[in-house]
Image 1 (tube, helix red, strand yellow):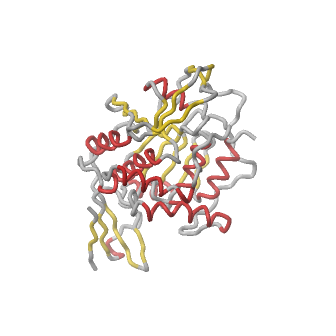
Image 2: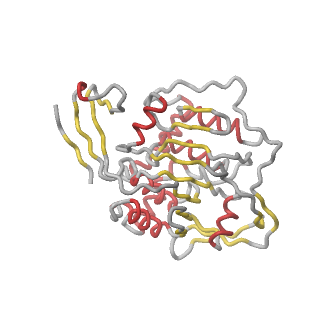
Image 3: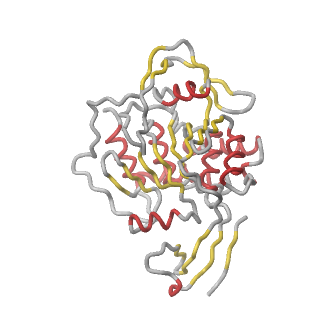
Length: 333
């Protein structure tokens, strides 16, 4: 049966010192990006403390994946995170050039990921542009509408990104942005494949679609002030989450998260990664992403989010349990 639906490692941390910012003044630039001006400094370092160990919680066992289920104590968290789908009209749900077609079961190899809807088999594809050899590096934090714009284009372009979280009062990566670019303004992007580094969310979006897409900025990311306003409204359900630093242990290797911006289950995990200031490689896998098949082959199942922690060897599904694992493993008690 047929029917078609179309929609238009080297060490991570190099020791460096940078004056710490005990007090800051927050301001909104005329260019509409979040900016902070540092006041007189003292010292800061991202050197790992050798006394800090990285082990999963005692008696820890990764949970079995439970598709489309919400743990009862997390219902309000997921509902709040889902509001973004309404305000942003699903931006970031689909990879660029998304296409879905109904197929018969005989057309599907046994080792191939496939979407099932009401007993029907749906094959999803997309049209991605050139792939960067190394992950794009982005410094940002969750509760920032300008940062969310960039995260949405990452999902649309199906890019892998090394995120350096920059929560308020974070001691490591906010100072590093000032050191590299001259000011604490977010988001800040570094493309190690080309040597390009830049502030300004709209400029970053244009650069990414030009270099790794078809050159066209998606409609919902091209509306100027209206885009920014709806990005802000999208975060109402999770007001303040993913914005302030929780003292934590800095791991030697970045975590890996298979996720995408529009998923409310992925959102609650990302918030905690940012609050704990944990660098992580995002394997973006929105609908139509070829990486869904990669995860299916790797784990025998596709479900987002999926966390891989090279510091402890833990690999796991289920957002609620991932959040608990991150806090138990990396938050300073």
